Length: 246
Ligand SMILES: Nc1ncnc2c1ncn2[C@@H]1O[C@H](COP(=O)(O)OP(=O)(O)OP(=O)(O)O)[C@@H](O)[C@H]1O
Image (cartoon, rainbow, N blue to C red; front, top):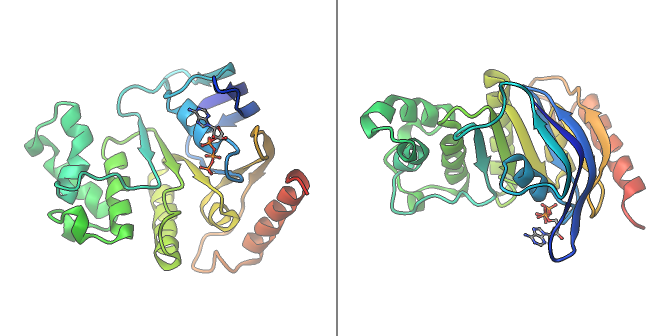
């Protein structure tokens, strides 16, 4: 879908956030960008979203994949919902901005809320929703325009562990069922190992890709306990041992 070629980013302040990033992201992959705080993960997402430009290097989209309005969904750590609007109105927002009437959008809003397990909460306002439910609304808002690429920046970091596990399971299932291309930023080795089909391990700043790992954890109810998952966690931990300063 998109190729990153020798991408570097230096801010006017002089901070070198990214250096010589090379990667080809394929359609349908679930890529985890995994690295320590400050290694440039969010910057890389912002470059992919077109919110910033690389200082050097290129981001080249495959023919037919050049993103237009609504083609990239973005989910942040904070759900960033409109507090006065219901879950359905929050999910409607990107469609409203593109000129769709509420009546035209109603069916799609309903199926998208159902997709994230919130069919019963369309009329609820954010203050009546738990942290996990607010994040589900945020994911629905990103999905409603059927983006070709979903960028997620530590979306589950602020949730308690039980809620986080549940959302990880549901997001992984959503990815398998929809085949969406997802790039997911995290500093959790466990989260990356559970969710992703591919893990780009980043070194401390300036962020480089220290390892590009294809995950092969079998699907099923015991993904968090199986030997392949544990081996993957070990492999990534070992990679970090080599790239982190002593
Ligand atoms: N607009 C900016 N101007 C100057 N420096 C910036 C800017 N945006 C980010 N940085 C710096 O670039 C580096 C990488 O930031 P970035 O937010 O991409 O890291 P990160 O890996 O996502 O970190 P975290 O996991 O803590 O969110 C940091 O040192 C940050 O302070």
